[in-house]
Length: 170
Image (cartoon, rainbow, N blue to C red; front, side, top):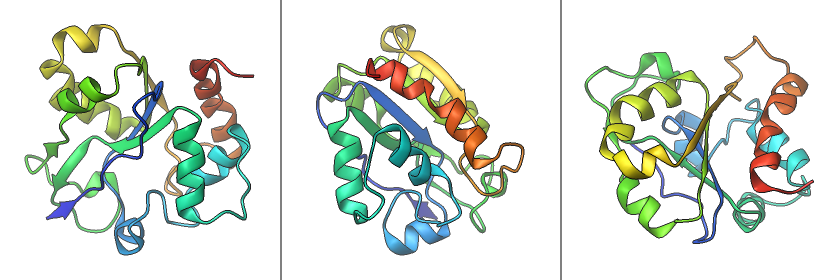
């Protein structure tokens, strides 16, 4: 059984980025998107003007201070390896989004890091948030995973620029 991480978020976050659940390397390092081939931090550094020399905790702090929350749809699941396609159907337990959104009232946009995160959110979470869910902008972005070869890193960066618009910054 895989157990995910607590969210990275400040109470005034405006945007929520959701993955599915951490991969093997992230679990080992206790860091979101720890696989060096994952484009997430490459994208975050460019969009939010983060110094790439900063350590993980400092980068996470800059992201949170910019109004971006990072979390995963799933709190627990069974999966062999790191691929979303290896998640055992029926083993998925979602995080407590009702409580999360009560504490993060300013979030208006939810961005999914890939199709699986969006699918799981829509199936497991959205039906439990009838009022709140109706007020959220939901947008799937291309997965930052190295397994997503449909987009280059720069192509992913171009698509992920939608986050900057949702934050209302240039």
